[in-house]
Length: 396
Image (cartoon, one colour):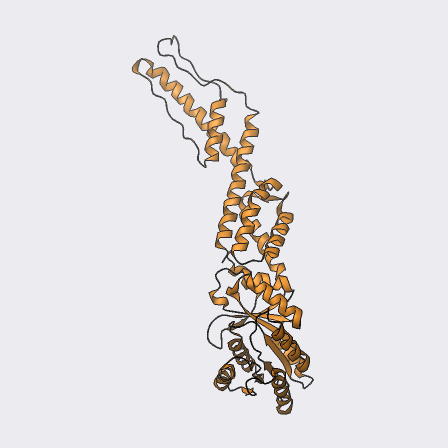
């Protein structure tokens, strides 16, 4: 999901290594006694000369630094001589080749000498804005992106990392930060079974905005409960939207789950109350209360869901949203949380979410865990949210 972010981290670490090599070469070059390059005069050779110096010229150092910055090393270029100088020229050429090899070895030794890279604040600041923009592009909320960047800075600036592991270490640091931001989910099935020990039905209230797949998600959870050998009943509390009762009854018939309903326009709180009484009478384990989808800006409908919560006293209130909504979901979930104090989150359409930042943002902004992810169209396509699996799926 975070492919561009991964590529940026790779580019950054390569730049850090290149910078460290160049600085080491510059520092080492200060300790070299400079000499003038070898010059062969064609008509003024009186006797053989042997080059004994193994010193490196200033020009050669500058060329090497430039080559390192361009990610390549300069190969030795052999000189040519005419027939009158062949014998002497060959000897000089051998000395030059020897000197070039020693010079190349000198720079390679410097490169191999660098085993650790220290990240300065200047190095971090040069890339931090790009990293934050990439997080935002992946639907990570602004406040979450800022926290990630701040935490990353505290964890790596001024620290030394092995050259061969620097990219891996920075990625692992980032993954660890993301892991800690996500709220640890609780096991809903365990909570239900614990409540049933008191011989009382476990009541779940669902809320969310229009068109997020709330009714289908309720059906998926009903199917999961059946697989776990837990009985349930559905309260058709969406008495507002046309055909909503027929839709939930269709799911109930397919799954063999009883659906309690009233007429359209009736009080949804009374539907939930009757479903609870039905569960108590028939020893049903779980009551799933559907509600009408509503925008977080509709104050009268938000007040209505508050009433449902007060009448039905749910054990848990779940917000259902879409992974692909992006940052719009942040404000939605915040308002619902203020109204009914949600306890957990289910994200639908996680299978088509190519960015992944929504899951990271909703937990942080509400302090509430993601319990399940909708991963397809079938009833079986509801999987428990796993922090480790999610962080690995980001592709960092």
